[in-house]
Image 1 (cartoon, rainbow, N blue to C red):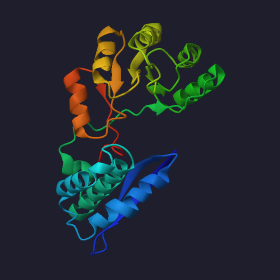
Image 2 (cartoon, rainbow, N blue to C red):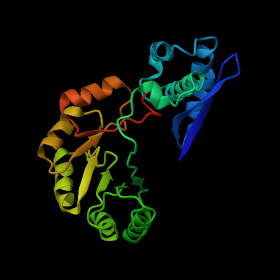
Image 3 (spheres, rainbow, N blue to C red):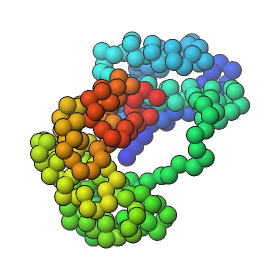
Length: 243
């Protein structure tokens, strides 16, 4: 999976680096920056991060509130925060607020293999490398059970379904089928991901926690998810949501 690295440089020579989502068409995010966002940033005050973000969001909203333009804004915003940290001589987390914890757990996010043997082998390797939380992208129960066999009890499996189910009942049935496998959450089980009312009904009926947010593109999307009661766990992607 490709990602786009963006360098923002000031007239004094200080620079910051940001990252924008690209997936398999990273060139589209680059085009959005080269042809739209970048020229609009020339000459702007790098210290006004919020103001610059709002300007870009409003000026280019007709190109869509989700997609390459939003991904490009994310990259620029991250680069500006990197710049701010360098100018202040502090890590960015110190600019955002006091640390709530000293360590953060990381989970292994595996590919969708579609083969129980491959899933079992890669899940076991993740455990060997020290991960104590593992995310799968499998929808086949045999593959999920294979991962469970490869991981000790106490290591939760998170299931990113990538909006596989078109019906709420199918999504709930799936959650019921996996609930005994120490599931940390089921992520975005139904299509379309912006149908928050349907997601809320799935959440109310499912025995597993529901996660969402990978396809949200801005803070307003997350407010709608929260207001609808559509998820137990929110997952903003900093390279997608504008920074």
